[in-house]
Length: 180
Image (cartoon, rainbow, N blue to C red):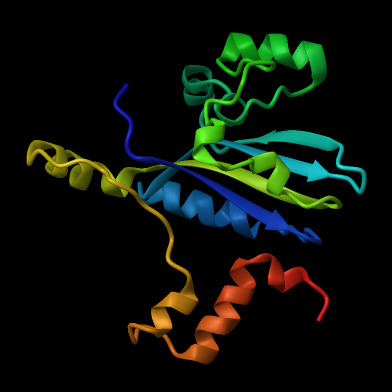
């Protein structure tokens, strides 16, 4: 199976207030063939740091069987104890194995989730970028790096007003849920 560029996005929620808007937007992007959610987990971390994990997905049943549980394998998260480890290993997510996203990547995904909060870990395939990636490869190119640019950094190059960037940056970071 050919697969487009894949990105893991981790979204934090201090006080989750879900009304289906996120899933609706992901469904809209899927319907337009812009992105496909390969796998998604909702992770709840209580005040003591204990994790509760729920698997989420907008894959068809056939796609889910083909891809298995991917996010858990990437971050080394075994879901549902020993029973989950067995099921995860059979699906491709070795529950007690070290994470594929290693310490060398310097991203402790589960450690970055604050206690008494929640996070959505969404593994997205960027369908829109397949043609671009293939053209770059045919030209002998390769990825050197990638990342989202903070709205605050866009002020300096004139793409956003300072007030708009500050408001958007607050929404995109933990500042939005912090008491003032």
